[in-house]
Image (cartoon, rainbow, N blue to C red; front, side):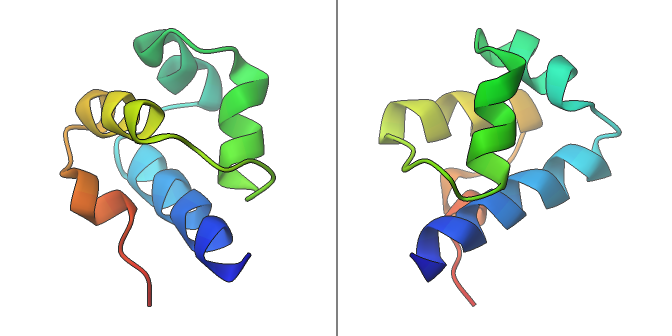
Length: 69
């Protein structure tokens, strides 16, 4: 789905703005590094709980992550 891919791109954008690696973000969220890769590539549909953890780790609003262009 286009929307899931966009969410992944948003996660990657904010992660890179914070100069974090996928491993850094995964550790901050309590996830496996591969999970972040799958999310960023749009290969998995994240739950709200997952997105909230990521938003908190990146210090952004949930709405920033789910913004669809």
